[in-house]
Image (cartoon, rainbow, N blue to C red):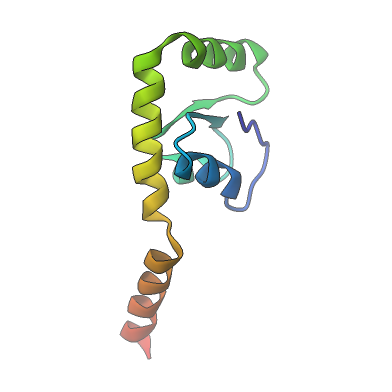
Amino acid sequence: MFPSLWEGFGFPVLEAMACGTPVITSNLSSLPEVAGDAAILVNPYNTAEITEAMQLIATDAKLRSHLSTQGIARANLFSWENTGNATVEVLSRYL
């Protein structure tokens, strides 16, 4: 559960995903882009929505498993190796 109102990137979301933890996070700032379809996105100002998402994860084993699998795959996209390779690729185009 990471209901942040503002994030520059959202490392806690990726760290949880990398561990296979199902993630509920804010639908604001950069978090939807970071989480992709591997998390439940909620309005952090809406406690009923947050509660519903928490109940879903607590009671739906299939959803927990799906989010865990998707989260690991999503976190792997943001590895330091992938980030470094993408940076080198961009710099190579312009230098």
